[in-house]
Image 1 (cartoon, rainbow, N blue to C red):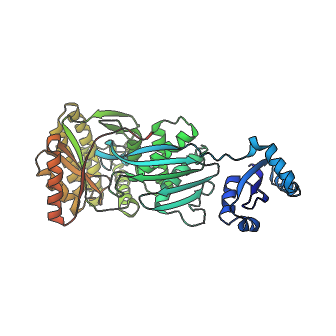
Image 2 (image 1 turned 135 degrees about the vertical axis):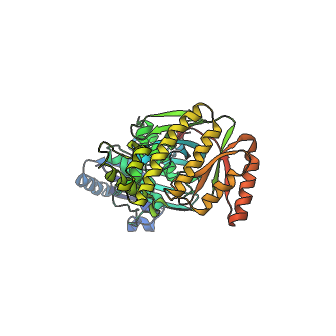
Image 3 (image 1 turned 120 degrees about the horizontal axis):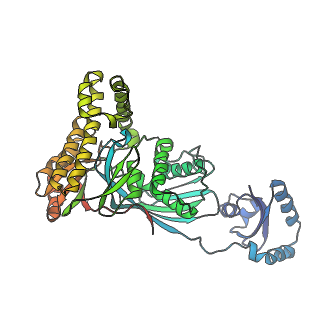
Amino acid sequence: MTYYCYIVECADGSFYTGWTLDPVRREQQHNAGRGAKYTRLHRPVRLVYIEEANDRSSAMKREAAIKRLDHVRKLRLIEKAEVKTRITTEPAPSLTVVSPARVNLLGEHVDYNDGLVLPAAINRYVTLKATPTEDRTVTLHALDMKASCSFSLDSLVQKTDLEGNELPAWAQYPAGVAWVFQNHGLEIRGVKVEYSSSIPIGSGLSSSAAVEVGFAVMWQALAGWKLDRMTLAQFCQEAENRYVGVNCGLMDQFACANGVKDHAVLLDTRNLEFSPVPLPTGTSIVIADSGIRRSLSDSSYNERRSDCEAAVRLLKSSYPGIRTLRDVTPNQLETAKDLLPAVVYKRARHVVTEVARVQDALVRLQNQDAQGFGALMLETHYSLRDDYEVSTPELDALVEIAMELPGCMGARLTGAGFGGCTVNLVREQNVSAFIRKLKKVYFDQTGKQAKVFACHATQGAIVE
């Protein structure tokens, strides 16, 4: 730990001397009226001299020695050491990070069951502008929410801001990323970050994962680490699991970090192997936001995950070699149906059949069979609605309306469910009419306004 003796010049030209662990932050405190009584009366102040000390005792002794100097001698001390100690007024270098949303085309609620998933990063973004600081404070300005928060990197375990208040939920995502980095022995620095988003919050497009990955890429760029994108995604998942308290799988963070332009990315969540998969030519991805919001922490997401784990425990009596539902075939599940409570069986049936659907989808995509791929999307929606029970009347309405419109080959809810969005596979020439008609009919049926937009697959988070 480094201690400093410092001098600030007051508004009337007088000097004040003190010692601190953080000269820049101490200057800010003096200017905010939280320093010494003398500086409160003679603000604003300007930091003009710092001198390192080995320990607290040395800093206090040096402070006392400087205080004994008269004004002229203090001026000479400052001028003599100006090159080394005068604080620059130039702003610290800043960087901008763009982190995309993701849409999952197929493979829903299987990432925490070691299954296969097929997400794509899409061109809706969280944009961060970061300026590093010389202290251990992280200051966040969430522009869309008109909210700000500051916390110390030394008090992440407490989950409190600088005033000792509990961190707001939105600030826990970047704080969690910082906490994980430090737990893995990676030193990070204080930073001021302004960020905004074109990703609807609570829509099932992974706004939280985009924030986490954006901050992870930001701190990596500032520190110069060479962590691969899979490791960054795993760190972000750990932040959401252990710090925020949501037992999400890896897919969301993986997709935000590893997206490939014009491709979905197949991820095997067991061995973490992944490969890009070209999307059908002549088609567009269209997102329809139902306007129904949900929070994963408050939803039944964790309950569904527990149901899957219970299914595995019960099925082990018949199939002792299984590790997760990934290892169970549809025939095996049907044979052992009586071992499971009715609800647990339904949850397991969704996962087992969804893994099979993703395997079928790869063949369809390799053959550019957009119609066949779309049919699998619709099957997934019915499974999520009936077996996993994570749909809503609004999501069901969007899917039913979409499938009646020209050019729509597939539609389903995307994300965890309980609200949010549907994803639709639509022929390019029909997109404009599809969007217009889907919005109109949805409003006529529900009285709710849907936000509907076309998007395309894009690359993962980058430093601009």
